[in-house]
Structures are given as C-alpha cells and as structure tokens.
Image (cartoon, rainbow, N blue to C red; front, side, top):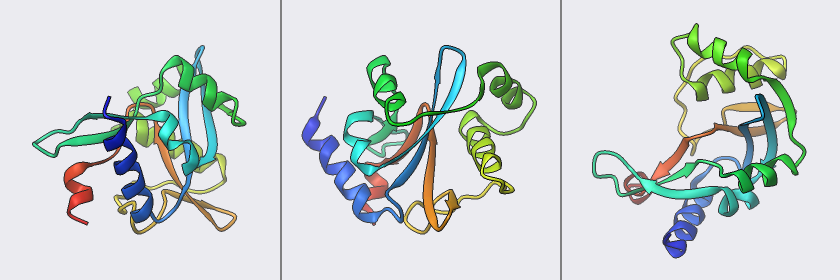
Length: 150
C-alpha cells in the first residue's frame, strides 16, 4: 500500500472536512456497533482503494479484524442485532450505510431523512452541538478526483 498517498489524502480530506467527529458502524459476532471517535483514528482504519470512473484512488472504510478490535476498544455501543439490521436493509430502498445512519439518528431521538450534503458543508448528524459524519463498513470517504477539484 502507498502509505504516503494514503496519508496525503487523509490530510487533504481533514483540511476540507466540516467536522472531525465520526460515528463508525461495524458488525462483530452478529451485533451492530456504533463507535463515536475523531479524525485521529482515520490513518489506522482507512485504506486506499480503486475509485470508479477514472477518479484515481479512493479512501475507504473496510475494517479488518484487527481494526474492528481497535474500534471496539474506543467505547463501542451496541446499536442492534445483525438480524434486525439486515431486515431493515432488506425491507427498504436504502443501502446499508443509509440504514445505519437512520438507526443512529433515531438512537439520538432525531428524525432521519435522506440527504446529500457534502462533507465540506456539514456532518450527517448533530448531537449536543457536535456534528458527526456517519460511516458504515465499506463506506467511501472520497477520491482523488474530488480532492483535486477542491
């Protein structure tokens, strides 16, 4: 892996990002967890992947077993069972990331609605005045083409 490019893309992303607070979602042993953390963890849990349509590399959240253990150690909270989560996905027009965002938003007593606000303008959820970006397994943060154009 090109660690220099990974570090450069994370640094550029952090420079442009509205918030540096995150809620990550992972599945471990049939349980969906949510983990509130900040941007300091990004170099340890993101990877470079191929972006689509000639956009270069992308920053992706595809946690390994070791990265899941790291995330669990950061104060993970149980959100729901994997079975409940997968049923929500199956009976919805939304993808896994959107359903995770919906469940997290509802956990904080708010009403979720699908939006496409850029990461440079706001987070996905604001709780007690703190904006969070919400990311579930296999989420793409951004790609080279997007970062170069900003």
